[in-house]
Image (cartoon, rainbow, N blue to C red; front, side, top):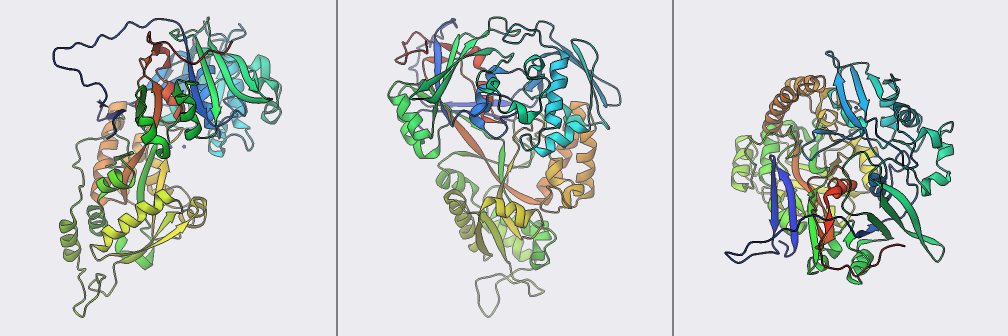
Length: 559
């Protein structure tokens, strides 16, 4: 129980917002006047993907629906960029001393878009659907909610009883709440075919207005600000999404003045997007960590159990080259298993920089030298050669990364054979049964606002869990297990700091970089801020603060 000309880079690192805006270099003595926010206008965004069901219990596998649902539906709470919980539907909450009971008070003024009051019964109903989600709701989420007792204490009070203390519990309260009075008495399979899913009724800051249909096809959806929303009212009264199959067609729509924003700008169109004078590109860290996993229990590559060998391999990778040249600058160097900018991140550890000379010396000190009779692969005192196989997802991006790493390690006289496979095969046929030596993969932390690294690194998870390295470090596991049942945030941060120190010393895996997400918004839209993302819809975290400048829009609103 997860340098570009017009680019704006906004990433929270060690609690600071690092903003790089290469567009507006103001002459000395010139003061830029920031206009006061005004209410009015509309915002049209090119949304890559297509509509399926605008329902938060049915949208787990469709990011396009999740983006729209973020504005339509409310949650008990959300999380800020640092992973700190922020109340939404919840007016307040309390936790029992033993950490097993959570009481939440719901805002009494919360209403559905049809005017009906939102009550604790709606939350109980939504959780019941999540418990019995069939193939629609992720299996781990269903199992979690089956172990939690949910009790409605009153119209506005709800209680959660956990079988044991679990500090990341608040993570699981970010689901969108659905209305019992409209969906009650049905199973999730029955709900999936209802008209409700294309004419939704939520309780968020925007309400459903209409679908945009052209030639018999749904090409967009219009939302209007909800007048009775319990929270801050948005400055922009209308938000329109238009669907496009890819970033290239979305960019063409922007160039034709059909939209004001682009939901995701992929690498293949990034250069063209950056050349657009009035398009600001915002970049945020994705909830992903690219790294190299080592199997610590594979006897055919026993040297990978040696932390000094792993350190030498880490020092031998030119990670900055990978980011700058292979990825075109679209990533951030990673230093450990916990995301920078979160409350749990420890910034006191030195970065491991590219140092092939030091790497060679470490290998020599560990007894691995080139054979006297000649050869290109280092041999240990016991005759074992520094050679192993690394599994790599069979995509152009991963292939380029792996080949660059292979060359770096070859310069250390370490021989690596690359085996390219479909990503699902790597997970199902190799990582899960622990049948591999090394693997270049991404760990995905979507739906995990809490920075808890337990699932990937605790020794209990080494057999049958997601600790694919089978790293077994007693003290590190104790820190992770204690942090999971500790509610005090400062104490949890201390425990995670200690864990990160051990991780940096042991290097059970080699963190490479965090991929980034690019989002384009026309410069007439002001107030846009974007930090690290847990999913693409997090770009709307500050949407209620967006407003339009006086520069007129070329696109026309939906009637």
